Length: 84
Image (cartoon, one colour):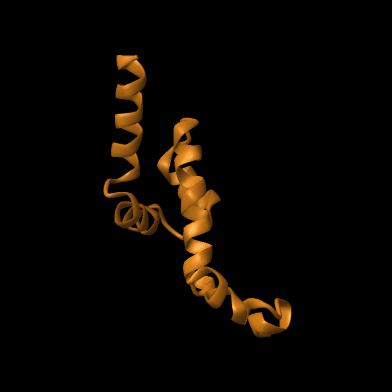
């Protein structure tokens, strides 16, 4: 079954957002990641909860999007909280 059958408007997504469905879905999942990491979730748990098949796949995508690994992101967050 194609995605267009399940979601007839999928073809207009790239016109409206500038993203393909796959890119949009990946971006939506990544936007949830910092919130989960801020809450102290383990990187592996975040990866699996967001639908990545492995933690390493999640780490690679996170690094590309945010410029650091999820564990570095968490460490910087803890350091900033400790400084305040």
